[in-house]
Length: 50
Image (cartoon, one colour):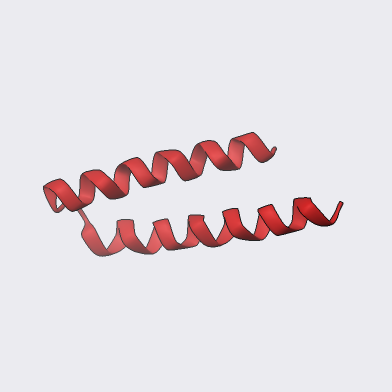
């Protein structure tokens, strides 16, 4: 499950970079990227407690 989340984070970062370069749906991509980063950080700290 943890690798799936990291895969999603990588894909979203790639879309974010494309959005910066080509100005595609800029605000939506940034909002989803922030959500993905928040989830990655949450899961990182959650996994360390186990």
